[in-house]
Length: 317
Image (cartoon, rainbow, N blue to C red):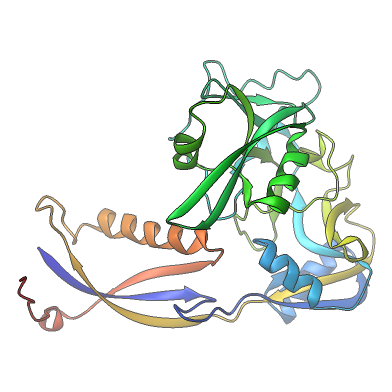
């Protein structure tokens, strides 16, 4: 069975060169809500940061040393927490987990357990301030992945910073865990949950906090539920009352369309490429490959007219 499709890449990237976010530092002092409105009217939205490449571009976009709003906002409450993998581009799947029986249980008294320890190959939620060894992922490319068990005892945020500075990130995703964590007993992994959300609806898990106590993973500090980048401290993030006025950073993401012709060859006769579910699953796999490279794209299929839906056969030698 064979079908010919053309798909559209809706995003900031082509196969050869990438158009990443354009950041704009606005020196006018506004509340977070006022800044959000301004950015949506003049640009795309308040700044979203998806990875360290974005973070460096954001810092390079201005000579200012001020503290500025970015597009991250907390929605307090235990029920508003969402699980993420630390490594950008790796999505958490509720149907693919390795929780220990009875976990996650928030067994932290008044404090939420928002970080995850791997204990004998099973997951348990824990206070992020707990000290433990951890595993770093070192991903130079898809074909060359290595992991390192770090014998230092650190909190989860400290472990994340260590991995990002010395390797790639805390180990993230079931595949990496399966490959790397078979011989360890108790270690931090890159799974965490918080109540922070991006203004533009992005699901980016990237966080760049200057310092975190356990409860900061959820609510910020008290009612300080809007995030800032502190430019004179390497751009590290903090949080403040949303009603305070300060400069802010908008982003622009020009959308480019690229038509790419693909011939799909299906060896399994039971796979029906006309099935919308099959086509949608394939798109999600392709989008995931882009996200693993730090690129946000939206893919869609455009099927050619039936009379054009053919291509020459190539004989196998």
